[in-house]
Structure formats: C-alpha cells, structure tokens
Image 1 (spheres, rainbow, N blue to C red):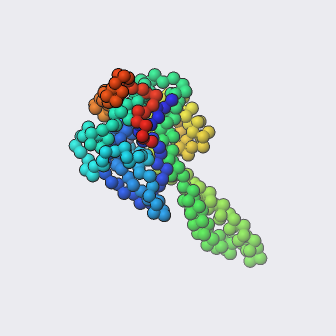
Image 2 (cartoon, protein in one colour; image 1 turned 180 degrees about the vertical axis):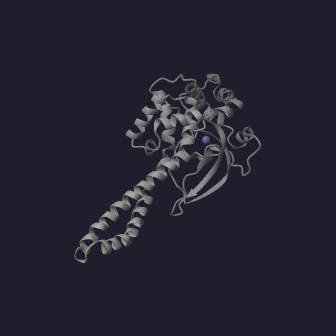
Image 3 (cartoon, rainbow, N blue to C red; image 1 turned 135 degrees about the horizontal axis):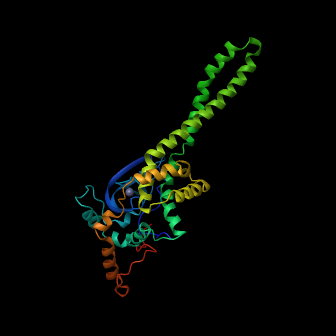
Length: 295
Ligand SMILES: [Zn+2]
C-alpha cells in the first residue's frame, strides 16, 4: 500500500480566479520524490470565495492542497539553505515524511511486488490528472464551435447564391448551413484535441517522466498503465503513448531523495520518534505517515 499521510498528496482541483502567493515553506513533493521549497498559495474562486490553501512545488510546479496549521510560519523570503527553511517553517517534516521516504527507497531499489509496484507507477498519473482535466477544454470546444458556425454562414450563403440556380438556392443554403455546422464542430474538436496534446507534452510529460524515472518502469509496464488510465477514463491516459513516455523517462536524470539524503531525514525522523515514543526505540514504518494531523 502507498504510505498515507505526512505529505500533501491531495490534488488541487480548484482553479482559482485569483491567486495570492504568501511565502515559502518546506514540503515533501510526491512528484519530485524529495523535499523542496514550496510557495503557499491562497486562491479565490469566480464568486470571490476563499479556496483551501495550496502549496506549489518550486521545482516541478505541482500544486497540492494543504493544511496551513502544519507550518510554524511562512517565510516571505527564501532562506539560503533548505535545512534552514525546514527548521523555521516545518521542523516536524522529518517525522511527517519519514515513512514515505522509507517506502520511496523500497520502490526505487525495485523491492515492491505486485500489486504495490503497479500502485507506485500509477500514483503520478493520479496526482497529475488534475492538470489534464484542467486542460480538458469543454468550454473552448463549445466556444470554437459557435464561433466557427457563425463565421461559416457568410461563405455558405455566398456559395448557395453563386453556385446554385435561383429556384434551388433556399434548399442548397439549408444543406450548406448543416455542412457548415458539422465542419465547425469537427474543426473545434480538432483544435481542442491538438492543444490538449501539445499542452500535455509541454507541461505534464516532464513532470510525469521526472516522477517515473526513479522507478525505472519497463515499456510493458507503461503499456499496462496506459491501458489502465484509458480504462479509468483518465484524460491523462489519452495524452501520451507508452513509447513516447518511455523515451521521455529514459532522457530524465534521477534527482529523487537528493535533499532528503543530504539532510538525513530518516535519521532525524528516527531520533524524533525515539523522543516521542522511547519504548519504540525510534522505529519508523513505511506503512503510514507519522503525522496524524496532516492531509
Ligand atoms: Zn515537485
């Protein structure tokens, strides 16, 4: 099972009309698979209602909802080191993410067995699906359809008048208007689909391949996930073909757990655990997060 809690993993489905970035905290990013500075974001929807706070990863831009009470403070200026950022904004971070990091190490060295291995490979698809849905474009599709239909009236009317004899012009115009509507809908669908794939490649593919790189998925595993994503009707499943994703993953450099290892977060978590529960002798579990207050 994927370790629960301890890190922001809830997708930020909200698409704020207005965003206010209030400062910096340290957080664990499930896409980067490491600790990075995150910007705290407060947004408002179309009606001006406050949305739940979110944190945006400074490294990959993943946006996740969070619980603002987990941070000691939010710094308006980024300190020189990540260690200082952790100490000042989220000193309990090692305890919160220690279980997740233990699990990451198992996943990265290939020790996970099915079905946990599949869950680990599916996780970034689920986390990033909010970006694919934002990009789904139903509003753009309807807008383009109406616009192209209106624009097609003039050429269709000219065609009916110039190409057909006067007695059949009314009937010809009726048929041509339907042709114009069908053509407009088809053109709008093509534009939205094309833009979605282009945006997916530009925004989502680098994040997805960065997250999958440490797990070194085979092409067969990516084919299985693509089938699963299409079966689940996840828009993200329609953005890439497995070979394209495999090549993108192969080009990535593995930067997972670099900061976590530098800061010895596992050691810090064990020491904190030992102080909190002397009888458990600093035992950490990869089964769950150790911070019950978080998401
Ligand atoms: Zn990230």
